Amino acid sequence: MSKLMKNLNPRNWLELSSPVTLGFAGLSLIALILGWLTRGAATRALFMVYRSSPAAPLFYPRLVLHALGHADFAHYASNMALLLVLGPLVEKQYGGARLVLMMLVTALVTGLTHLLLSSGAALGASGIVFMMILLAAASGRSSGKIPLSLLLVALIYLGQELAGLFQRDNVSQLAHLIGGLCGLGFGLAVRKKA
Image (tube, rainbow, N blue to C red; front, side, top):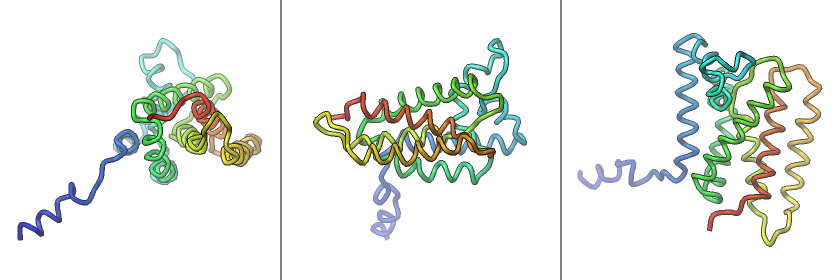
C-alpha cells in the first residue's frame, strides 16, 4: 500500500521545470477568472491597455498587466498553448530571471506602442508569445552567426502580421509585430545562460 501511495505522489512523476512560464500561465488564468467573476470590470480596470489619463492610478500598471488579460477562455487557451510549448525551452536557454525581464519589457513596449498608435483597447499575451517564437528561433544561434531558421521564422511570422495590419479584425497584429521584434532583438543581443 505504501508503494502505491508513493507512486501516486505527484512529486514522483511531475516536474516543475519552468516556474516563470507556469507562473505566467497561472496569473493569466487568475486574471481571466477575476474578469469573469466581475463581469469584465477587473479586466477593464487592470488587464487591458487603453488611452486614459496618466494621472489615473492604474494607468501605469496596465501598461504591463494587459499581457495577463484575455477576452475569454478561447483567447486564453490559444495564447497559453504556444506559451506553454515555447516558454520552457526559452526559460531553459536564457534562465528564469532573464525571461521575466524580457516578458516585462515586451509587455511594456507593446503597451506603450499600442497607446501611441491605436485608439482602442488591447489585452492578451500574444506579444509575449511572439517574442518567445522569435527568441526560440534565435536560441540556435552559435558563433555569432544568424541561423537560417531564425530568418525564416521572422519572415513567415512577421510577414504574416504585416499583411494582417490591413485587415479589420479583433487581432492586434501590432502587438504581434512588436513582440516579435522584441524577441528578435533579445535573441540577437542576449547570450544564453551557461
